[in-house]
Length: 142
Image (cartoon, rainbow, N blue to C red; front, side, top):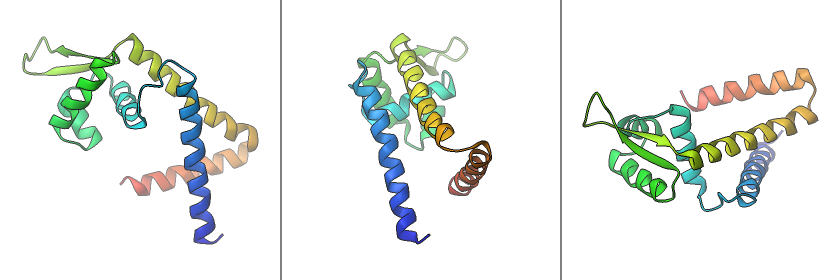
């Protein structure tokens, strides 16, 4: 396979995933979020009640940027900010019911994408794909 062919395949794959996510979000009342905000909410859900510092470190952005992001997500009703009982200087970011609903929807979108692969590939091909994707991701993020 030529590099151009592979680049085109990755572009098609990326576009397809984005379209699936956008379509699912647009079909819900959660269409008001940008993809970037969705990534932030997904990170908050994955970290499970992170502090602002932990969220900033995980997202690779500054603490003031996290403060601005959390402020916007609070205004939209997706997260709340809760002060730590142990350290009054620390605050945690928690998903509201609306944020939890979005997180569940986002997980379901990923599940549907995985189902596309499981229907198109046999067991051996799925194992091979998982191994190759894991290898590529490990090299990309190490």
